[in-house]
Amino acid sequence: MDAFPYSERKKLFLERRNAFKQNSQSQNDILAYERGDNGHDYTVLKGLIPPGLVGKKAPGGGVWGKSDTFFTDYKIHHPDQILSESDESYVIGNLASHDTRQYLAKWDPEGKDRTATAGMSYMHLLVIPKKKIYNAVALNDSHIIDEMIGHFRRFWSTPESADKITQCLESAVQRRTKAAREALASHKPDLLEDFDAAMKEVEASAQVLAAKLREYRASQDDKILFFGFHPAPDASVAHLHMHTLLVSDEFRQFSTRKHDWKTIPAQAVIDVIHEEEQHARSARKDVKVSA
Image (cartoon, rainbow, N blue to C red; front, side, top):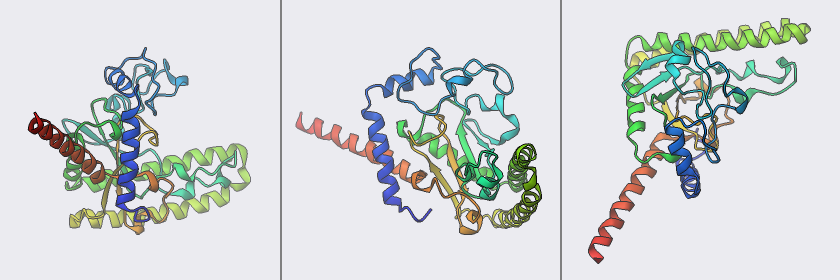
């Protein structure tokens, strides 16, 4: 993550935030989104349920609405992916594997390089609010960010967190292996032997990384934890979600770096919000003095 300095990413967030707030339709979209208005014409918000899925059955029951995202009512749709729950947020697993070697074009029947869809680190989890809250560019205060960071740190400190996390990450690797292998078996069976050999290497390295994760968690060293946000319109899901990563190189050696440029440190988001609050207070004070 060091390739993009804190100051540059803070500047990027401020640019995205200003662009969002200056759009005359943004507030109408936010209000409609928060109340679950499926009749509203969303013109600014990005990352809602794709139109083709609206009205279709959602996992766990119900149907997708126009104002939904893949994180809406998450406990109903994906209870097995919740690693921890607080009054205000969930720590959830990432469905994507951390290892780009599972997404190479040669394993894809269409020959597409899908490495950018891999995780950003061996441990790439998400923390999401329970309420419908849009992207960080729209936040009025930093309360929910403070809560999500605090929630993850509490979860990380529990003895059972290592088991929950590594099991979740192992499932993501296995899920990707199964999907890619089935596609190859149907379209490129001659590659199965090479694919199986490559996946053994993936599984072996994942076991090494799992052991290292346990060492860090046991030592209660959370300095390698990174909390960050992708600012709209560069976020894949509209619902606010905080990327939680282990950022040392040993955990990122097989992971994607494609999204580093847009991953804004949570502290940068908090700083921008607090600076805006301070500026507003100063402006109000100046008005009172002049009056």
